[in-house]
Image: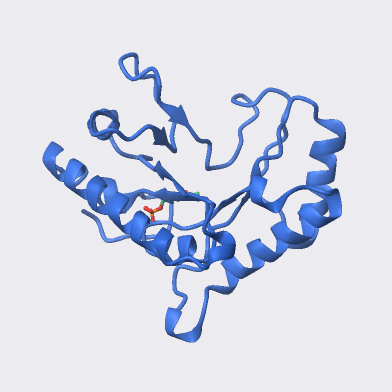
Length: 201
Ligand SMILES: *Cc1c(COP(=O)(O)O)cnc(C)c1O
């Protein structure tokens, strides 16, 4: 069961989200202004027809993997746990503590010629009150990215900071996100039994 969203709704919601992304990008301080954020539409648990509708409205980056013959130029982004059967020879990784990031990145750079280190991702606290200041989880990721790049001599502007979801993507962009992952705002609330409870649609 899912809340039916009409085709037109997905189109107008997408337009609205693109506009909000643009506005948040324009609010950035000059030193991070160059990092244009990408929108990854997260369609998990939703029927693939919804992906096709969003595709038809011009969206190309999606956060789940379906076989969709007619949308060949979709770019899929794995945003969840990596699974052995999906990523050959890669151990299942659900994330690391901030103090392990340098070690992991060093391992990827030194021992994994088939992997590119693209950047870092976090899910920020969903309940952060912005009137108290920037979300510390995002600040943490930024700090971690800076330290990692200095350590390995990488250009911090060349790596991705994937942070920001439906509830906090504008703030995430304002502090430097290059990749926002937005699900429920585009596709409607999920009825997701195995995850934290959300209001059933
Ligand atoms: C579900 C999910 C999202 C999207 O969450 P919404 O709050 O629905 O926008 C983003 N990132 C990850 C890793 C997710 O699992």
